[in-house]
Length: 522
Image (cartoon, rainbow, N blue to C red; front, side, top):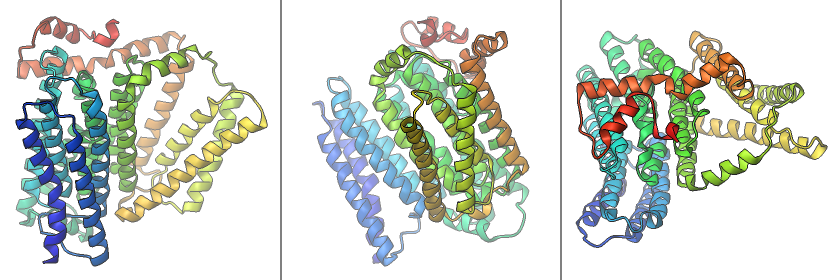
């Protein structure tokens, strides 16, 4: 009987959300979302109760459900983001003629995400994965009269079907090998076995990694993510703060299988690694706040996948949580981005001196080295190099008044960043208990990531502080065009599956194919 108590509390969340979505879609009068907010508060109470009972009494769950620490963190994150979104939308979507349509498909998307996160059954997981994409497609088409939104949704629809097909094949292989549809049974086997993976298992891991790359909008199929800024801001927040992170969740879920497949690991390291560097550099050339955030998401997802490939699954989960909360805030606060940008533009530009760079580097290396030593960390050093590099840039650019108080504040900020990083990382390490899969320091994979980080830092320096050089101008122009990757992919997409765009769509499409975007033409 005990297994039914917690299972029922968990099932209440997607069921109540689904029922609310169906009922609000039947209403003719526009809803302001007050009832929906109360539904999500009720779901949050059910979730907290289920977690409490599970931790105190260690009740079992029905076999098709799972409540591991990773899933608990994800469910808590989903409920938190959903409450914020609904509260924001109550005012933002006021006056929209199709607001009930919006509410219905927003709730159905969240329902599908909840199903995926709590599912322990391959078939249920896959059906939820498909449902997320189909429900999100309806939200991406909220303004069907906008050609660019329609084109972005069309490209997303195609790549999503590819990812789902790859995932279905991978799950079929795993079911055939293990004669089980339960995810915990499959991952438990790879946690304990000492046998090398068979060719079929390698293929399954490779397909799972490929599906994760597609879900996380990695190059060269990233274009749809950049263009969906045409949708309402809350949809962008939902996509960037929640849905797109599921690629990382997929790799964390199947970590014991994925990390033992060299082909899958290097697929992630190469594609996600290059995406991280290129997207981060392209982001610096963008004008629109929402477009910059979209390129940032592509880069951040690449970094999260790299962390998985290095066996740093606890860091990937921490990255997922912090990125979700930050992007939800950034998109919902994007209306203030114009004012903030104007303020930045009026601040006199001043390049850090050589002394500022050396001081920042010395302080960063000292703090990071001390944290590395004290924490007793063993594994890839590239993540520590990334932290040291980021701190160096932060400190070097704080070149205001040169006095004791200013330098003390800079040192305190750097110290708090390092302490927060180490503490949070250790907490997530205890939660996941996957330390055995970490890549060794200066292994081939770690060396590749170190090279990527150094390339990113050097290129960023030249683009920001040496932009007058002819070679840098040429690189900036190429980056401004996004390396023409999306134009190539758009042509391929429309060749495979043509679509009639609304209104002035054909003109807009020609401009897009020529590498001209709305942002760039302003």
